[in-house]
Length: 352
Ligand code: NAD
Ligand code: TYD
Image (cartoon, rainbow, N blue to C red):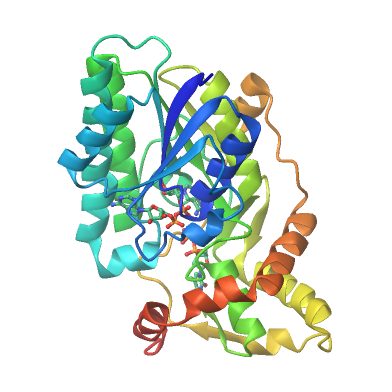
């Protein structure tokens, strides 16, 4: 018997694919619908291991198309939504802000409206769970952590589009009583991340003996969390989170970009049988990102105390697993590195 019909948006992307897999495998009684437009970042190869599961169905649709979204909600009568679909890369948002406004803001409103329309005022057992980022809080100085009550101060088109969508989700809670929950997570790393983001890009370049582009002096700081720990946090918040609340998710794991890349180079040297220090020679400092946020760091004590979540992996172990995955999934990586990715790469990096 099906207990729940859960719509997961963006399930063909990096984090979404881990969330879909976790839910499909952990909850055979839930029907999981993965809605994804399969943009450059969406890849069904991320889900080949579960694509034939009886509790899984893929729905190709664009969240900016309100009619298509309303039709799917009518047809399948989802009783909860875990919303991850988004344009997610800061550098792309600098090049094309409007796309981020359309997908991240309008797309989210379309989903909220569709849920509100089919749930009417009967919200028993219903949930709209919005997945967001710590980048909405802006940029930290040398000290302090983002908490759930830190004022929003987004600075990139990406983070401001996510901030806007967070506000709208909460507005539907306050205005229409729509049952919502929001979580804001720090930088994720792990298998299946599109190689435009720092770690998979560096892994791929080191493997291919290409320069590793480091923006500015590499002094910016990020708080890294293994993607499966984010997926586990989403599971916990989906089941136990308080309606109307926000939960911060982070790794308690801050690294400057340059230290992180040196750590990665050590692992790559060992795994590729290179002499120690060889990969680090590829580090190349390039023109900084416009408006580059200095530091992100999350206080996840609310999630830890109230919902009993902890990151399960130590960073060293997570990095070993991640590098191992990219090195043993050459086909996955090579499929992405051809075609459009090459065009993106030369536009983004050739003049830096
Ligand atoms: P991703 O870019 O890897 O995946 C995004 C997915 O959304 C892709 O499968 C893409 O095809 C789909 N998508 C994009 N536009 C769509 C549209 N119009 N209609 C339907 N599907 C569409 O992103 P990710 O890194 O997995 O991030 C997922 C979510 O988590 C995002 O909401 C992001 O803001 C948030 N988040 C990401 C991180 C991180 O470190 N990557 C950290 C915190 C929060
Ligand atoms: P990224 O993976 O794009 O995530 P975000 O911008 O969402 O934090 O970047 C992580 C950090 O790495 C960020 O400080 C920017 C920096 N960076 C580089 O130095 N070089 C690169 O080629 C990329 C993509 C990012």
